[in-house]
Image (tube, rainbow, N blue to C red):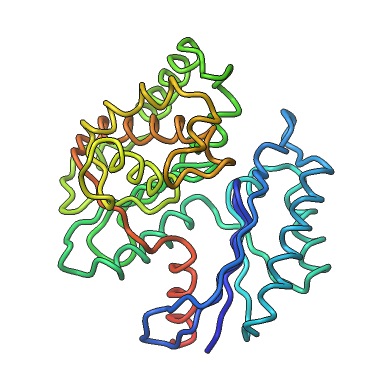
Length: 305
């Protein structure tokens, strides 16, 4: 069967088409991705602006038009932190569902972490043992850990790269004062919200699943050598000051860094470093599967009964 997965995130609207069936590995056949940075259009009072709604509708329309070339039998649509937290999110979703004949569902932060963990578990298999998954999105940070397909622990924290950049980092290059303020905030949130269980249990394998972490791994490999599929804490710590001292235009010229993500990669790297230090992680491995694959796998499990 041919299924589409529509991901309405804080950074992008992303519709990916897969060929798959129960028990199979989902095979991507087409991809439509529109960067809209929806989180930037959420006001201080928690409302998505009219311009943000317009950009969101245009992006969804573009992706659905593109998907018709592949003719999916169904589109599984979900939204994450930007719409999850906005005060007018429910109204926006109702309008989108009516206009595009979708069933766009909002995932809770814990659901987002758990479904991403499922994808990571299926990719790495049972032999990976106790798995620790880290995902840094535009609006939130998801962490999950466990030995089964459902994590023993799953949490979501408001430490997304776009959110933090918008809320804390100023000037170009970023001022050292704003970076220090950001570091203090991240440390405070982690200190207050990371469960003792997560900090005390050893993981056999630590994996990262987000575009942010893939980009960081790519830049670290280009600058410092090493595997493009791993992030090492010592290399990350050496890399961050250099990234922060660059202008946004200079970062946009780095390998794998898009213009729209050039501003937020610094915040993403600082979150990654802070989490790795807090949980005593020396190295993590990049996993190619993440939330969209998890949505497919969960749906296939459901129809198989």
